[in-house]
Amino acid sequence: MKIVLGLGNPGVGYAHTYHNMGFLAAECLAEMLSAQFSKKRAGALCAHAEYNGKAVLIAKPQNFMNRSGEAAQKLLNFYKLPSSDLIVLYDDIDIEKGKIRFRMSGSAGTHNGMRDIVWRLGEDFKRVRIGVGRPPEGRDLASYVLGVVPKAERGLLAEAVKSAAEKVLELI
Image (cartoon, rainbow, N blue to C red; front, side, top):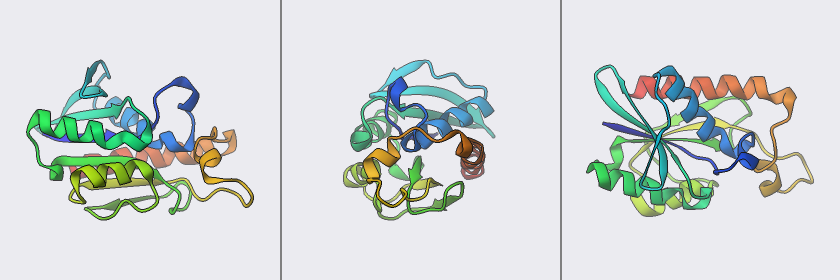
């Protein structure tokens, strides 16, 4: 089994923010696999699917971003899986808007949700990073990542979300 954890913040107010790219990619992946988010387990909203004969759990933690590691750790413990069976989808300000990058392991970088996961699990898990770029000069980081994505950028980021979901399918 693989666990795919999309990072974001719960609630309607965060739905269309840069910081919810992980949730959007998880939702895109669930749609590709005809899976529905229906159960809450280990503090995450979950969808069960199968791809190429492998079980896949797609999860969206229901606590705030900086505590994403709780759900990751609880899900891995519940299913008795090593962290190497985890794939995390999340936004990254250090990547050009609309681009994606994949890493087999590594540090958390500047992302607080990833810092919590790395603190709890170590660095041995895969991650697909969705570029959201840096805030414009004069705008602080928190208001940028928690701000609603402008309509002019939604198409570009929707393509990046789809590419991230497709990359997860490759990894599975």
